Image (cartoon, rainbow, N blue to C red; front, side, top):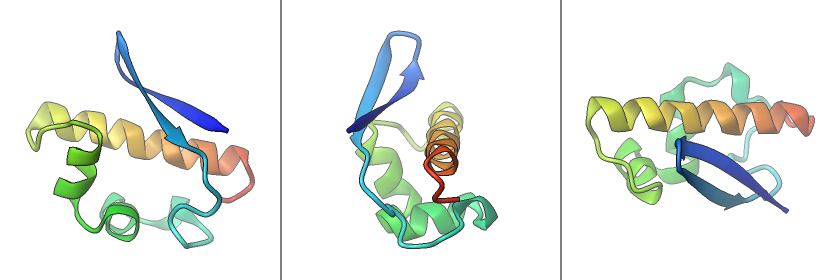
Length: 79
C-alpha cells in the first residue's frame, strides 16, 4: 500500500506505507527535528529525498509532508 502526499497543486509523492517508519511509538509527541532525525538522519537528507530545497518554501512543504506522515500514522493507530 502506498500513500500519496500532495506536494504542490500538480505534484504528489508516493511513499511506501511501511509499518513503524520512525521506530517510535508516538510520533505526535516528537518535534519535527526528532521525527526527521530518526527517519532520514538530517533535515537536508529529508528535504533532498522529496526533491525540496532548504529554503523557506521548501521547509514549509517539508513540514506539510511531516504533518501528513503524522496524520497517516494516527489513522493507522500508530500514534
